[in-house]
Image (tube, rainbow, N blue to C red; front, side, top):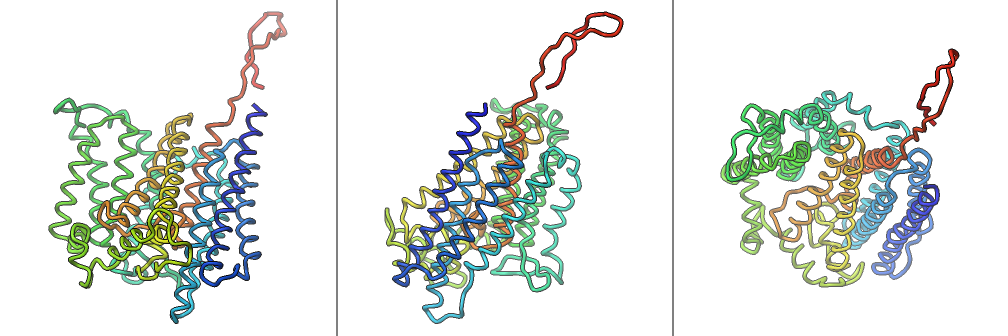
Amino acid sequence: MGFVHRRRRGAELFLLVLALAVGIGAYAAVGLGVEGAIPADMVGYGGWLTGLIIAAHITVRLVAPYADPVLLPLVAALNGLGLAVIHRLDLTYEALGEEQHTFARQQLTWMTLGVVLFIGALVLLRDHRVLQRLTYTAGLVGIALLILPFLPVVGREINGARIWINVAGFSFQPGEVAKVMLVIAFSGYLVLHRDALALAGRRVLFVDLPRGRDLGPILAMFGVSMMILVLQNDLGSSLLFFGLFLAMLYVATERPGWLVVGGLMFGAGALAAYTFVGNVQNRFNFWLHPLDYYDDSPGSYQLVEALFGQSWGGLIGRGLGNGFPERVPFAYSDFIVSTIGEELGLTAVMAIIVCYGLIVERALRIALISRDGFGKLMAVGLGSIVALQVFVVIGGVTGLIPLTGLTTPFLSYGGSSLVANWVIIALLLRISDQARRPAPRLDPVDETSDDSESTQVVKLR
């Protein structure tokens, strides 16, 4: 076991070196492509990024030695690449005469905070099962965070979506923290009630539908999702929260009937939103006929320019600094994938999708080997967050589905999203450490009591 453990940690260290090479190498390539020289702060930037990742790695080695060895390198590579692409856009905005942009520097600051919380979560949370005690507290906190943007004083609307709060001059998206809280709440609730929710009701076309009396939880979550869509004008978060609950409900009960009910509810909600919510109708029209709305306001200019840029990038891209991603509004956040597709090509986009797929695969693997039901559902929920978010973001940017407005995990600019995603990885590593840790050996030992009666006693070693 010790030999296998050492080999696994050696492989993790090798992967971390490759991940740092991706991030630091991309940063150097940006300087060469845009300015014709390696950035002057290359040593400081590379040293800071390396220090953050090494600190995270050492923490994992010390407090979670049996944790999954692949997750941290994958996250380090994605975060490093995202920083380099954001820096590339900063340089272009400055060259165009716009006010000085420091998105990359701010993102590095948020990454530092994310790594600090990552380390804190691993050090302070030695057993993920204690979170089950906070089931209803986490649920209340999650709902409260979703309500905060509605408040007149702290709530703030940006780009048509009221999903932000402004406190002491800092903007924050509470929904990013709410998704972690709701995963904890859903996991604790479903562990307690999955037997009742798994009971079959009426059978229709070879599918056992759930009983009517058990529809309360999914109706409540559907109502929350519709509230987010109508009041916050946020299609992406609405899809994320409802899809998250539906995936966890299916895994907990193993009943396909819940997928049927959830699919019908989603279809009815989508039709109602298309009919009565103007923002949703616009997004569908832009998706179906993007060129027809190119010059309108609001229009499909952003999507069309992103699609043109990706098609121009082709298979291997134009090279960092040799494209025109600045033509796409918010290329550093919502549309960072289109920037990568234009300058690094379809090959890089496919590699990024593979990295996200591996993160989801590792989360599901952790769920399979977890020894407790709460840990299984938490791992599934955290993996589902990444899967759903990546699907709706990359699907929207590439024209597969309508745009939803979510950020790409670890790549896009955004402090609240980046910090929350680092905490998600910390929770997955904690669950995997508990699941992979060898169980204590129980050996039978003969012992003789004082009255000379021979008994078999199991001694824990």
